[in-house]
Length: 254
Ligand SMILES: [Zn+2]
Image (cartoon, rainbow, N blue to C red):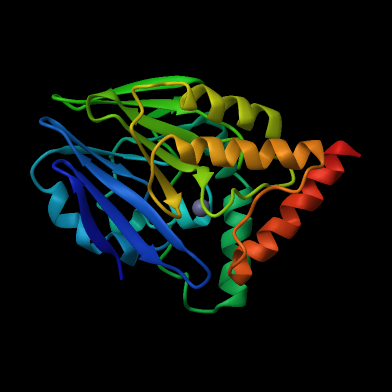
């Protein structure tokens, strides 16, 4: 069941507990437009969002094409709606996402039947894109790292960076094709931006720019072969993730 939390007027966070971890999206309500930030893992995750979309035009933005962020779209009246994502996100819907859905349907029969894979439609961008909602804007920026299609969204009027999976606590999740150096550079760029006051990731705690630093330090240490600082108590998911991260980073160094 999704909970809606008001982070500040005009910004509601959508939070769902999945089997292994929690995921967080958002609804950004401007004077003229509403943005749904990720459709989460399953159509039912968006049930509480529907009443928020009745009054204004709205668009859906995918932070990236991973299942826990982009599989809930069929829970919205999505036909003819603008859906925005990075060009690599659109590409991932061609083969990767359908293959993953088939796998999950095989592993958990019945659970994923309502999922419809809906790729980004009208607006596909490469580096950055501005969404003007009236009183505020959301600036979308490519920040490849966790995956090649990851983006973040900056709302300067509120000092808020919606970080998707580019930032994660207790630690970031590296994949086999993660461009780790680019990821570090992207995190450092945002860390230097003094207009960023709040960093809201899709997984883990909300904080300030220190979250960007913690993630870039972790990644830099891995690449340098130095043991990164991690919390003593990690749940199974993040212990396993840390092991995989070490493997991917060592592979890169080797
Ligand atoms: Zn995720």
